[in-house]
Length: 438
Image (cartoon, rainbow, N blue to C red):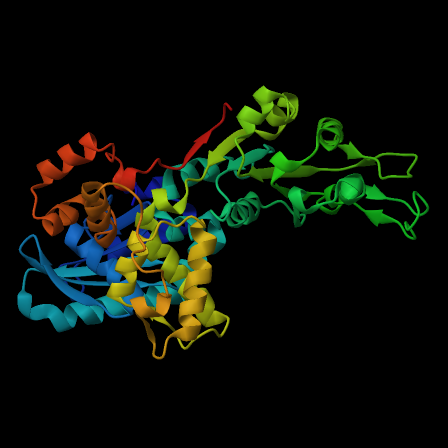
């Protein structure tokens, strides 16, 4: 999880009310209460609160089990819980008195009800990007930049492997932009070459055999809104030239039309390809690349951000419950450990499919490792020591102090081995990033 922002005034508007309410409730029933959502955290001691490692791990497990957990840290008793609806959020309450466990659990449950009831829905209405950040805390630095430029008339290029969640992020950016037009999505790789121009720019009746009526293209459909062009790296060079002209001129001319149509469109383009290399090789127009890349957002593969797995799993299971797939399925500890070891070649899409299958197969409310139906010996590649470290980090969700305890090492030794093996970032991961200069 990203370091908490230290001032409530720096938080998105929807979360400021949450931080202020926590501060006002200081001293009620317990010695303290804290809430964490994505890169934001606050306790009754003020903003910038940091969950003790053991408490955060307990809260993440409570998020998946649906039951608050009692732990001890810093000489105090803690109750750790979480909500998954409308987005994953951690809650903790603490007291200096070990005998206050029942009161701590009641305090956490009261906060869970308050968060789900009005605080979180209000926050998400004010800032739609919070839903993405809550489900993928590792993306918090990139989302902080997106939050500042979401409403700007700036095209964005989203880079990342297939299944990493680029369209989910694009929809959140559109919602945060407050553009009054629709969100229109098109997969460039799925359009036959002969139909690209008609699909993107539109067609007039009689323009060619089979054109029996006027039809707007995807660009015109997104007027005053956002056009999401997925797999832009697969667009042919002739189509790239026409798209570039439409973006430069702010107008499109449908096939068979005699006049152009003015359009106001913001483009969010995405690809799993190395589009910079394609531009250098001449298979992608560099001028189109720079037109699309007002800012570039890079989304790492899921295998490089395993600390997001419990949050993504919680959000996906909550969505499945809304869709009627399983009676409120929960994830068991053994299943979570198995997910932490999985290589995730299919990224978040693979996690979604795997959990859907497990939710349908599970005999009870809890999904166990057997329900996941993973292949025998399934684990991320690497040497034995690196694999052991990844296992420990996965089981502790990136908390290095907890991972060191699991390995029987000092924290200093874990840091030394992480550096020696090139795993100095949790799980050997590169963080998500945003650059305004391609």
